[in-house]
Length: 249
Image (cartoon, rainbow, N blue to C red; front, side):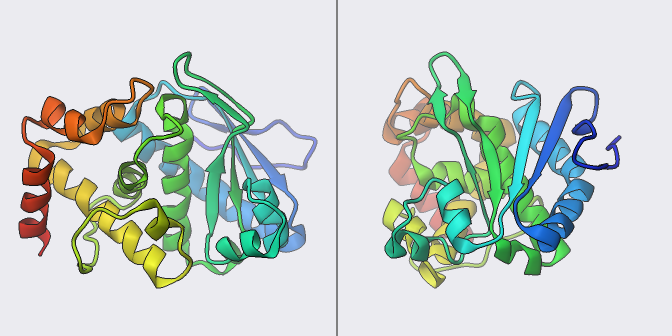
């Protein structure tokens, strides 16, 4: 059961028996309205993440609504230069942390930061973004800084979009970090390809195996995907990519 948010001085929201949600409004009235919508969706979002990832992750969730693109870029970890801000113009939200130690599973300063543009999103789109970022929040302690982003982002979208099918985009190849960072259609297509790959792995091997692959390829042991894929799935990465292309093509 999700508690109804009260004034700023009241205790945080409570989700289930053990998670508290701190809502930090830096976006004025629009930010307050966005956080009210997020409060209505946070319970189902937590349920979706727990269903895939389990319950062993932070009991405290901090969510911030910002009032400008510049403020969002700064709180999301970008620099304050114009070029950096431009990279974040079409980003709705991001999960970030000040420090992560995957070997000890310790995370500090973790938060989900929403851009002011998120206020214009439909309820469905907002739920997807919230769940996607909440997965990153939950998995942060088990995710190395150098983890392959085509897998971290693909799994996050798989968790956030249950039962949905990604659009087919050509070429069906794993996206690079440059693809995922490029503003506009290139970034959107890159996320769709990452999502499509994760969905294929879950469809062929099961969601538990997708989770196991994430922990192997994205964890602190630094297992390369070319090694993690056959180790976890019993098939080589080239053959897995061919199967995905045939399945979704």
